[in-house]
Length: 214
Image (tube, rainbow, N blue to C red; front, side):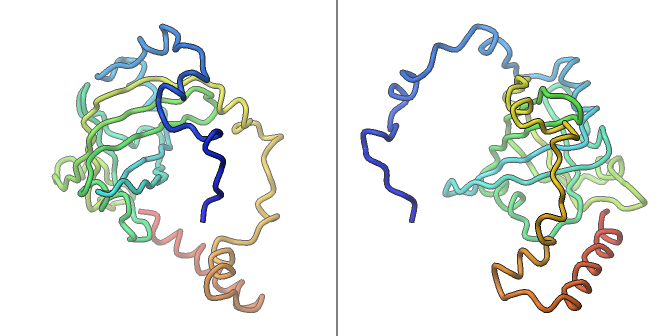
């Protein structure tokens, strides 16, 4: 159960929320567009990674990472982009959500850039063979593409990435300080096996990555 805070410390209206902050400056209001300008197009073509936010019919939210070589997102026209759906774990959380509720939010990142690009719009799952053929990698064609009709597009300032030092290699942490992905999942569910069996499971996952990346 979530911790209960005193009602006087809980914000329950937009008026109360906005009273805590200064008014939005003009540039933040002006930057929001409904079509892709040349700089937004250039950013998308450079980006190898995005986060896809979706919600189901009841409003339960999900965020999914999507990554590929730079330019993996197809710019269909100034109002539309298409994202290939690469092999995953087949939970299909994002895809099921899109069927139930087409509203999506995207956050594009470019390594080394502290600015990000945000797109909000409505998504459709598409199996058009011509579009999918353009998204083929290593002779493997995605089963479908997520086509997003853009409602809003705007650049987001650098504060979050600068605070986090995301691209600063001197701030990178040692992955070995935490268990492997498989062990973390097993530790918190059925329990992890002994070290020898655990090593075999980790090696199997690495082999699966090689076979099923596309």
